[in-house]
Amino acid sequence: MKNSLKNIDKILAEATGKNRIAGASVLVWQGGKEQYYTQAGHADIAADSLLQRDTIFRIYSMTKPVTAAAVMLLFERGLLDIADPVREFLPGFANQHVSTPDGPVPVKRELTIKDLLGMTAGMPYPDDLNAETGRAVDTIFNEVDGSLRGPGGGNIGTVEFANRLGGCPLLFHPGEGWIYGTCSDVAAAIVEVVSGKRFGEFLHDEFFAPLGMVDTAFYVPSEKQHRLARTYEESADGLIEYTDPRLGIQNRMQSPPAFESGGAGLASTIDDYLLFLRMLLGKGALGNVRILSEAAYDYFTTARISPMQQQAKDIFCGGASGYAYGNFLDVMTDCSQMTAFARKGEFIGAGWLGTHFFVSPADDLIFLYMTQSIRQSTTCYVRRCRNVVYAALSVKPSPSSSISSAR
Figure 1 (cartoon, rainbow, N blue to C red):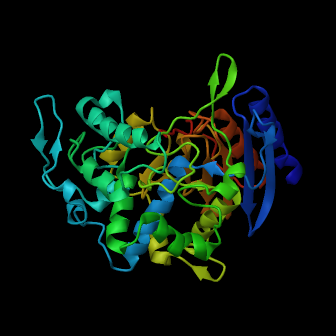
Figure 2 (figure 1 turned 60 degrees about the vertical axis):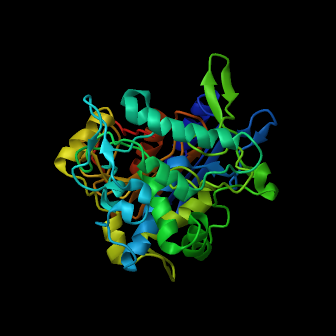
Figure 3 (figure 1 turned 90 degrees about the horizontal axis):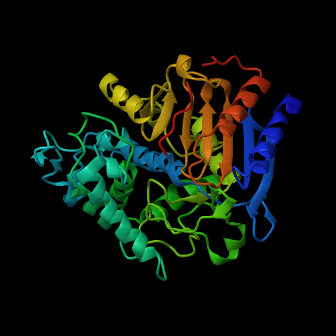
């Protein structure tokens, strides 16, 4: 089995050798133990610093499942209801409007937490294609990014940021479409309001400390900065370093940020994030530490969008991919749509800089892939690695259209 998994080394060698990525690490966990770990390439090309097992990565949208887990925890404690209107927690979401060709119109119904968790709220990321809505969101992100170019961690907090988003026109009426966007940032603000703690403090107390995730946070302190990988992008001259802030996230993550993004803000290591995924694989528990009830876990990992919303998701993602959506997770429901090996019930997450995971409960399996290159969210290298994993671990997946990702 491990001889077969060594094919992953060849895939990473090709990716780094062709300058598609600077470096990457892969971890495979099954049957209660690590089955394989490998790494290749650099964390910092200019310094000739090789990627290490304790390298810290900006995980961007792999923050989203952590945010959803936080909402599930408040849900199971009876501190909020998924059907609650968002404006009950964030007054900026009162009296919302939808952008139409004929001008703004009032929403047909109020936006709810359920709309946020399913990405059915009509709240996109900054996007020129979305005209008025995209421009309004872009203005807010530009203000946050601009504040990060100076010293410190900016001056717009998580709750203030979310309330400002509430003033942006929606792309469609709540529940009447699907668009990947800022819903998880709003969910993080709700966690702050309900818990009475900063979002990062809540995550530390309820998830990171109990699970032993010692390197996961919204910034990287000075004593760990040497472990933070550099960020790269492809160019005609090969890989070049990318240093700009993105979606309100400091590139070097040197200061505690005012805005703790529930959609993109966390940094972590491959071993830290594995602990979070092992908790999910354990239906809410890791060893003797229970984080979520099994009822919350079941709700969390079940796709919950309607057929109409699914159709909108498939269009947004460039065609049917076989993954439905719920609680900031893609959940495999139709393996026939995949051009990679897949398993019904597996759930995945990926980040803008190339981080990726899948969990297959049916196979007691976790796959983690970490890299730091823009626009590398889910590539042929990830698909090839997952094929090797499924084949080597002797499961019987259904071969099938590509892993589609909007991150």
